[in-house]
Length: 294
Image 1: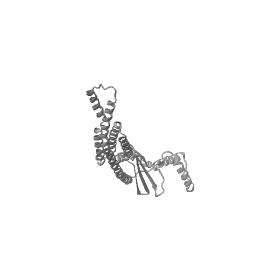
Image 2: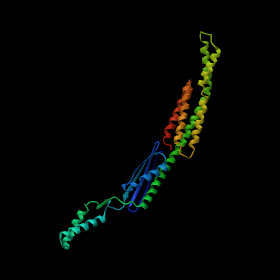
Image 3: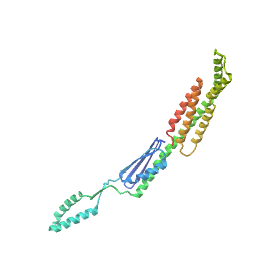
Image 4: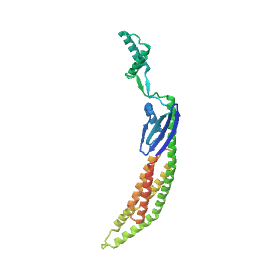
């Protein structure tokens, strides 16, 4: 789920650098840093990114470097004309004559300096060129594609690691099989020895056999072994599907852990307990890496 992608694009008078970062998260969370003039595009951009990346804490950064100096302010010429018209009308009403040419330039300069400070004369911001934005979007998608490729490369490494650890779990499960059989025989023998050592010999053998069968059934781990083997095979099967399967693999590891814990609780054999500890260690390593899977 983690990844990084970068792209650069040049348009008229501006150079754009786009970076896309992804961290682990149960859901999709998109954070966008971009020039204020493009803020009205943010909602559509978030939607597109969510459809492409599915899960993760995503951060998109868009930097613009202008190749030519330009102001972020523009003059509202229509408002200036309206102000000038009103000033001219007021001058005529007050009876002032047209100023001399030399003085006229100074008056015009002073008037303009005054007018630019009047409301709505200066407009802050830049107009967004839709064609330019389309090019920026293509660059963003290119950065996202680079991030997806980064994820795929990491996924191949994780696939090898998962296959290796599932194989180890399967081998450990096979190692438990012979120990489980001999353990039942040991339990029977210990119970008989304890029975013969009792001073009171007046025992209901039928009831004893019933209790013994019940106890041995409780100690038997055959069902757990079968289910655990099924879950391990199913993990590999789901891992090889093309659709996002991180959550599903997480559910399967929960079931694997449940079977391992049950085997551990039923195992009174030291060697079996050692194997169970090894199995838990391998499973924890799988769980840690599953946080990186979509």
